[in-house]
Image 1 (cartoon, one colour):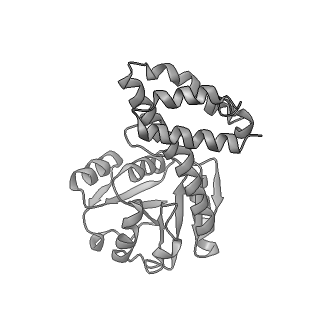
Image 2 (cartoon, rainbow, N blue to C red):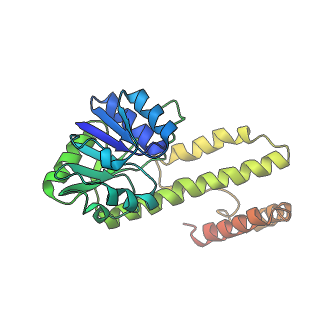
Length: 253
């Protein structure tokens, strides 16, 4: 397909490179950040565009890859007649695009995307469309570069998005807090990486509830109290520790 990318951030950069690697032509990169747009367009051998009024209407597919809160604003400026327009957000309704084209949908990558990474993670895609023609076209397009492509309406996509936030963003925040604690106490955070990797590895084979370990899982209140005492000077981390321990105990198998 001939594709126009609207956006120049993490999602736009990673997806556009994936599209190109799988033999789709990136016709144009549109956005407000002149340097970012020029750099991305140059890497894709595409044309830069700084006004949606001037975007090339000959593309088959227009991908709006901007922040969730900017999708409505961008879509209000885009008119693509009968061409397919999609956004890439998990929490934004497909209907925000209803005035951009007769054919619109969603191409949501269920993955944390960072343009500075030197590798491509596996990315499941959740898709939707306002009619069967559009759904089928997006399905075929996504299947050309993704192993897993699932049709999901607004509600299903939002539930996946919530699950992703809890399992990824919240977990990473715990890693950040832990590293901060380690740094302040001269503990090597790197020593924890094999444990973190093993914890995630087990998810491929076992139910996470069955793999729960630690003092809360075994009802070791004495150890919990020792840990809470160590965290007296870290009130935010202490509150999270206490809340998580209580939740683990409450949900023990």
